[in-house]
Image (spheres, rainbow, N blue to C red):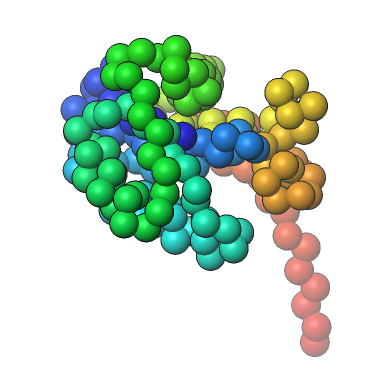
Length: 178
């Protein structure tokens, strides 16, 4: 399942966010696009990533019948991916992706607002939000994170820092050998 979110509310006229959501683990992959015409090539890159990293084939994709997906339909038919269509403008049928998009947008705007960052940093906020959401335990997955379900290991939280701080103090002790 995946969705496209236009960023008109962030005054980024040409920015499009493409989300891929794994139906089993609820893990999210996030791709910022310049235009909807890049959906096809981005899906091909995503497919390659899934096949190489997990040694699995994508079996089914669910989309609305938007213009950016029409080119994908023929591609899906040629490689044997089942293309499930939902009715356009019926967000109820695409509930998981819609809820995930809303969660990402709300988390991103909260991150930007909390640190008083200007909207030009929206891409960092969205990237950080997806990263955090993928590592947050959820009741849907019996209090495990999407990351843990997908990679079969507990995520590392030790290096997380506050979003939007100016710098991180980092001390390095160097021993000089004469």
